[in-house]
Image 1 (cartoon, rainbow, N blue to C red):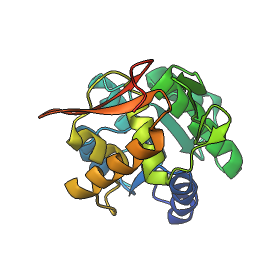
Image 2: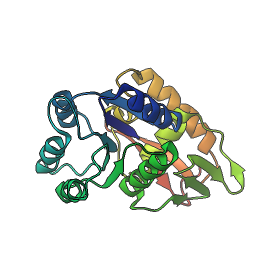
Image 3: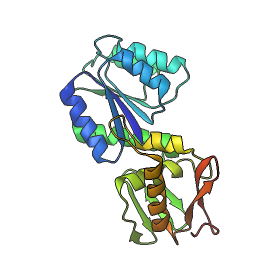
Image 4: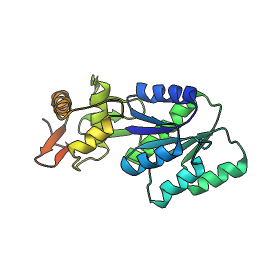
Length: 226
């Protein structure tokens, strides 16, 4: 999943960014609202972590602009503003969750997982695809009782495809989902990741199908063994 952190406190951005990256997500970071507004217009995200006290455009205004464009990306507000009226106003404007600083990193991670789970699988923490079970919060996959040994990139690829089961994802969409601004993935790199993931899914009842000229889709069922 691709996540945007909008936070001008470098220490907080470093901590939550490292936690999200360690969980296998692609993470972009910005420290001002003006650049964040442009990024949200230009890139699709699976989660936005938003500070309200930004140095230029206030986070509440940024949220208002986001929702006025009918962008439904989940927004987790992380702010020092603890007043009840502020929490109510921000949630009414379309924030999905509200966390007051200082907060425990474990609680932040749990709230982020919940919003990502709601985004990708309508709140279902596990997906059963053929003989494969995909545990999204723990980022694990297994076939029957055997764990699949997947790299973070392979799991990210599988998660992206599984969240859009039986729907084609273009190469550009997959690269966008797997990479942050400071990482790159070439077309050849994507081909290698798909090839390696296909080999690991062999016999699982799940397969990655190439749709020529369009991209890839994930299929599950009796006819998707390899």
